[in-house]
Length: 271
Image (cartoon, rainbow, N blue to C red; front, side, top):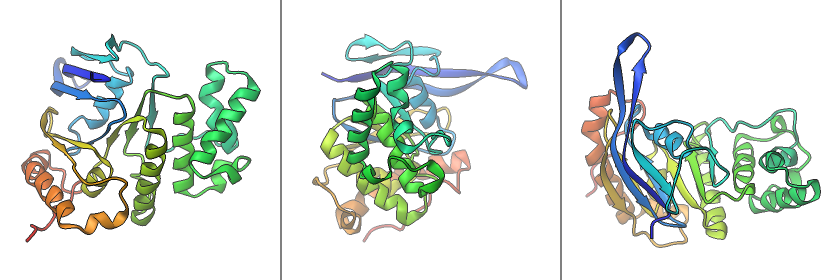
């Protein structure tokens, strides 16, 4: 039985410069995700990838269709879904430990219990020695690990990740991908991960969802049969390169349609 079911989901926006007309952002999105599955979502800029996450988090309301989690309709935000953003969104006046505790404070978890749980998740992301540091004292990769620990600390059923490594340099981004897989192997939360990086999408995923140019539709779902656990060297294998070429073949026309040259780079054909 699927843990999350998205059924014929569409979203239209009223345009502020043309109140009588609307903009169709997503069209007829249907998707089933199993418990513990790692799903990545790729597509041209502006195709609605982030919008899909916002709908699953119930921060936006669909124009049509439905979302269900464990058979229950999703109609409001809840701690069963946690979002991790690109910009970390840490509170600069709070220590690392206190940032991780935020969600538990909102749930009114007793102080001793929330501190113990926050420390456990800091250990999971290998930041136990930085509990009393402030965000400005950390590197970008470390700040993102704090954001991941904070999301995991409320023990969501699904982790929604919106280009969480997009602001990091290329080397740190690769390392963070490996770190995320290590954390996922330990915790096995269901993850839906939006990215523009095709290599990142393949490296992380059990399944890749490929979306079209606006209005966003799912044009293909690609199971990834690379063995786990994975290390970075797997990116150099022929099988990995074949996955990359397959995805690019699907995306090239969509990227041209969207005019999104700077967001998805073409790749050479494999031989």
